Amino acid sequence: MKVKSLLIGFIIGGTVAGISTLLSTPASGRDARQKIQEKKECIQNQMIELNKKLIRVKDATIIASKEGKKEILAFSSDVKSSINKWKADVLPHQQELQKELQAIEIAIHELEQNINIKKA
Image (cartoon, rainbow, N blue to C red; front, side, top):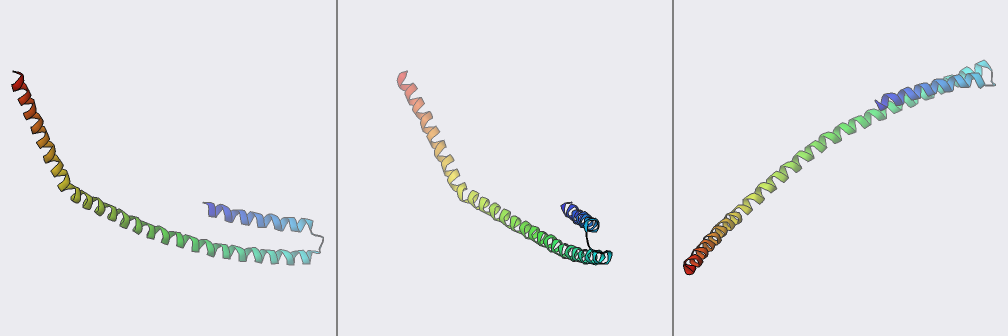
Protein backbone atom coordinates (compact mmCIF):
# COMPACT_ATOMS: atom_id res chain seq x y z
CA MET A 1 0.00 0.00 0.00
CA LYS A 2 2.79 2.46 0.84
CA VAL A 3 4.60 1.72 -2.42
CA LYS A 4 1.46 2.51 -4.38
CA SER A 5 1.05 5.79 -2.50
CA LEU A 6 4.69 6.65 -3.14
CA LEU A 7 4.34 6.01 -6.86
CA ILE A 8 1.15 8.06 -7.05
CA GLY A 9 2.94 10.86 -5.21
CA PHE A 10 5.80 10.82 -7.73
CA ILE A 11 3.39 10.92 -10.64
CA ILE A 12 1.32 13.76 -9.20
CA GLY A 13 4.47 15.65 -8.20
CA GLY A 14 5.90 15.28 -11.69
CA THR A 15 2.67 16.47 -13.26
CA VAL A 16 2.45 19.49 -10.96
CA ALA A 17 6.10 20.34 -11.63
CA GLY A 18 5.49 20.14 -15.37
CA ILE A 19 2.43 22.35 -15.24
CA SER A 20 4.11 24.90 -13.02
CA THR A 21 7.09 24.95 -15.38
CA LEU A 22 4.80 25.64 -18.30
CA LEU A 23 2.99 28.44 -16.51
CA SER A 24 6.03 30.16 -15.04
CA THR A 25 8.60 29.73 -17.77
CA PRO A 26 9.96 32.82 -19.46
CA ALA A 27 11.36 30.72 -22.30
CA SER A 28 9.78 30.13 -25.69
CA GLY A 29 7.32 27.34 -26.32
CA ARG A 30 9.91 25.20 -28.09
CA ASP A 31 12.39 25.53 -25.19
CA ALA A 32 9.68 24.84 -22.66
CA ARG A 33 8.54 21.71 -24.53
CA GLN A 34 12.13 20.51 -24.77
CA LYS A 35 12.68 21.02 -21.02
CA ILE A 36 9.40 19.29 -20.26
CA GLN A 37 10.42 16.35 -22.47
CA GLU A 38 13.77 16.12 -20.68
CA LYS A 39 12.08 16.26 -17.27
CA LYS A 40 9.57 13.64 -18.39
CA GLU A 41 12.34 11.29 -19.51
CA CYS A 42 14.25 11.91 -16.28
CA ILE A 43 11.16 11.13 -14.19
CA GLN A 44 10.42 8.02 -16.26
CA ASN A 45 13.99 6.78 -15.73
CA GLN A 46 13.72 7.47 -12.01
CA MET A 47 10.43 5.58 -11.86
CA ILE A 48 11.94 2.60 -13.67
CA GLU A 49 14.92 2.59 -11.31
CA LEU A 50 12.66 2.94 -8.28
CA ASN A 51 10.53 0.03 -9.51
CA LYS A 52 13.65 -2.14 -9.87
CA LYS A 53 14.81 -1.24 -6.36
CA LEU A 54 11.39 -1.98 -4.90
CA ILE A 55 11.36 -5.39 -6.60
CA ARG A 56 14.82 -6.12 -5.12
CA VAL A 57 13.61 -5.07 -1.66
CA LYS A 58 10.53 -7.27 -2.01
CA ASP A 59 12.64 -10.26 -3.07
CA ALA A 60 15.08 -9.70 -0.21
CA THR A 61 12.18 -9.50 2.23
CA ILE A 62 10.74 -12.77 0.98
CA ILE A 63 14.11 -14.50 1.28
CA ALA A 64 14.69 -13.09 4.77
CA SER A 65 11.27 -14.21 5.97
CA LYS A 66 11.82 -17.74 4.65
CA GLU A 67 15.25 -17.95 6.30
CA GLY A 68 13.84 -16.50 9.52
CA LYS A 69 11.11 -19.12 9.54
CA LYS A 70 13.70 -21.89 9.14
CA GLU A 71 15.79 -20.46 11.98
CA ILE A 72 12.79 -20.15 14.28
CA LEU A 73 11.78 -23.74 13.59
CA ALA A 74 15.34 -24.94 14.25
CA PHE A 75 15.52 -22.92 17.47
CA SER A 76 12.15 -24.26 18.60
CA SER A 77 13.29 -27.81 17.94
CA ASP A 78 16.51 -27.21 19.91
CA VAL A 79 14.57 -25.81 22.84
CA LYS A 80 12.19 -28.77 22.86
CA SER A 81 15.04 -31.27 22.80
CA SER A 82 16.84 -29.37 25.59
CA ILE A 83 13.70 -29.41 27.74
CA ASN A 84 13.19 -33.13 27.13
CA LYS A 85 16.83 -33.83 28.03
CA TRP A 86 16.49 -31.74 31.19
CA LYS A 87 13.34 -33.66 32.15
CA ALA A 88 15.15 -36.95 31.61
CA ASP A 89 18.09 -35.74 33.72
CA VAL A 90 15.83 -34.49 36.52
CA LEU A 91 13.53 -37.52 36.68
CA PRO A 92 15.87 -39.78 38.72
CA HIS A 93 16.50 -36.95 41.20
CA GLN A 94 12.79 -36.25 41.42
CA GLN A 95 12.06 -39.91 42.14
CA GLU A 96 14.80 -40.01 44.76
CA LEU A 97 13.38 -36.93 46.47
CA GLN A 98 9.92 -38.51 46.51
CA LYS A 99 11.36 -41.63 48.19
CA GLU A 100 13.14 -39.48 50.79
CA LEU A 101 9.93 -37.52 51.47
CA GLN A 102 8.04 -40.77 51.97
CA ALA A 103 10.73 -41.97 54.37
CA ILE A 104 10.49 -38.68 56.31
CA GLU A 105 6.70 -38.99 56.47
CA ILE A 106 6.99 -42.55 57.80
CA ALA A 107 9.56 -41.43 60.40
CA ILE A 108 7.30 -38.56 61.52
CA HIS A 109 4.35 -40.92 61.78
CA GLU A 110 6.41 -43.37 63.88
CA LEU A 111 7.57 -40.53 66.15
CA GLU A 112 3.99 -39.41 66.63
CA GLN A 113 3.00 -42.94 67.56
CA ASN A 114 5.92 -43.24 70.02
CA ILE A 115 5.00 -39.91 71.63
CA ASN A 116 1.38 -40.99 71.96
CA ILE A 117 2.43 -44.33 73.52
CA LYS A 118 4.70 -42.59 76.06
CA LYS A 119 1.95 -40.11 77.01
CA ALA A 120 -0.51 -42.88 77.63
